[in-house]
Length: 164
Image (cartoon, rainbow, N blue to C red):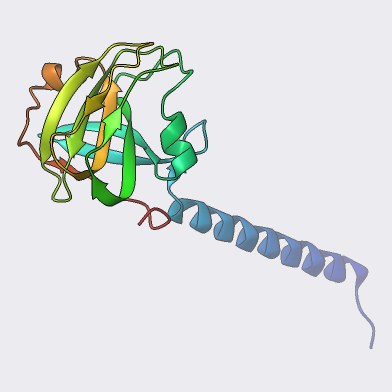
């Protein structure tokens, strides 16, 4: 059988193009199914409270929660960090090595905000939840007040599968 070298070359190019297209499609699909990540490598989720939305990094391991927002010099206007714990407890936070003034909301399993307080940078004053909760949301100081968010309002978010 006699083959035309131009036809063979054309078929090879077509197969390479089809293979490359398939690889790109698979990568795009995989990336779309993964949660976005912050510069610190933490998953980022959307949190909605009373119609106000923010992007929150999720700190769910002991190491991530211990570091929190320490050493950061700024936090985006509609950004924050959601601390996630396996079990309910009376959570307590301080601001050692944290340079950004923050407000914190303690959130129950049902998404209800049970307490909001402001925290001063570079202090070791303890800020505790009045009851056992699994979630705490830190944002720029004044964000909750400026948005009209109060105790009793609902925070809505979906945790990444890797955190649940």
